[in-house]
Length: 135
Image 1 (cartoon, one colour):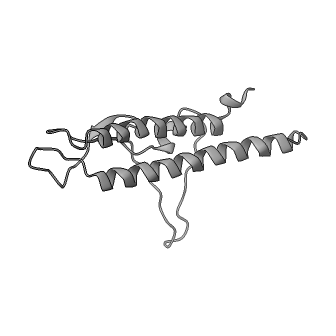
Image 2 (cartoon, one colour):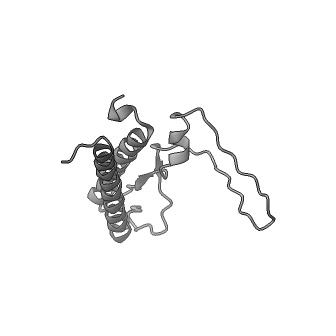
Image 3 (cartoon, one colour):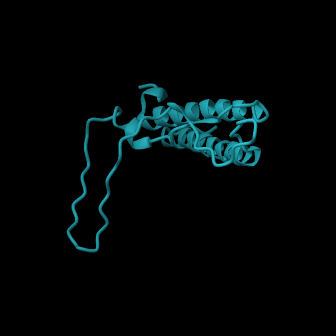
């Protein structure tokens, strides 16, 4: 079995691709911050549960055996679909992009991508250790 056939690696690869796509949209928003009438776009939040549903047919359910237990529910949403952002500040030219907000999103997106990359690398290292290979 190749690494890409393992659910954890497929999910991490998909997550990193989502971050790459989002980075492109955020860069477009920054580049068009002075374009009259331009409205920023962003991707819907990545949903691991939705993506993971295609990896396995096994299901796990929770049962509240005590009244103080938490109940967990998951909502369905589509990922990777570019959508118009809700613009709170519109300039007189009709532009709805705030550079400060976009730069915060770029930074957050970059940090999340680095976290996914780090998790990917550590998972490979764990598998190598489990197989008795050191490198």
